[in-house]
View 1 (cartoon, rainbow, N blue to C red):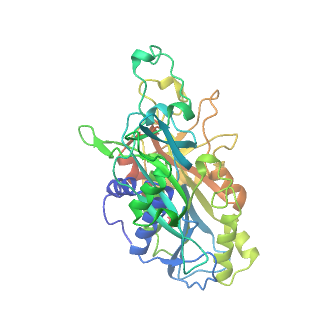
View 2: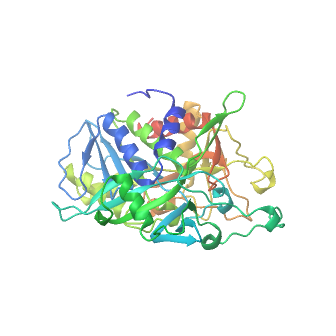
View 3: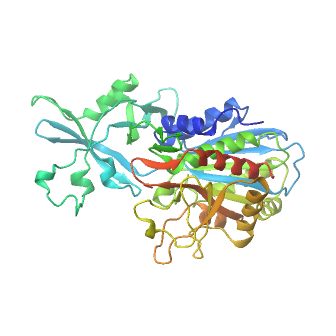
Length: 433
């Protein structure tokens, strides 16, 4: 099955739809269903068939999808790719109403490690999931919500009241990052403001809302710019570039003769140690369930993992045009250089010499633009899902991703053509090329 249209266009669509981890998974599932993948329930027995494609949604924010080839046999090597569905930003607390005179604000907490000032003075909307009282079931109904319109702003302090703002800016998340929702008359009843707002958006009674997981997102539209539209500026490039790359690659590989899978995890930005995160037994449980459903044993599962390969897909750091010295002096990755093969001897990136050789061979044979990435020796840098998944499955793992600027900002920057390169590489791996 070949790619049906420009991968940059797919990414733009994903960026607009993926306004919470719930919405990212829903958009990925929709693409997979349209490509003929069958949905499985995690708490039910699986009766799988060769030559078929499947996916399963885990708690609404994590997704696994896999292809079982016609020629499948026990202990067949698994070719897999992973990414994360979350990003840093403000999340709404319980009982969030805060007032300052006639100002209606919402109390928030910070998820992950965002660049605080980048969230200020931008149009913010609200998205996430809500649990509703369900009269016919023991389990509450979960509904996704996206307000799809500007709902709040975090106003910055005027320079006249902070003369040091351009030389020293220190923001307290509790005091300085509280979003302003409205200006209300003095007689207005502020209690229950947000629950009433949610109920109105859903068309339900406030009393039927039992709980929510809601956050603010930057409403700025993705923009292609430059003389030849070579640059893409958008919110949530970290890590929806990789999510869309995995989904596109999985669909591309869905008629191959290779046993392949993608894994899209929540909670990477807060360490992954959750039931739906990469640092859990989830991966091992689900992959072993697939193999046992096909008649394999635990030993077959072990053989399949240890003879396979995993891609850990997450964005990398490009050379900064105004601060080039912050990057490694001999391994230079610019926007537009294709994919970064990420390496670190402390294993914050999981790549080892055999895994990097595997990736290099594919790139050289298929003429896929790429560079190796290292941090400076005096800068620790970030980490990815790679070492966690590699430890859980004992799979050889390659950390890769597109290079971006302004990582963890409310708006990030990449070269648009790098998305095509990323998708080509992921598809090549999942097809065993």
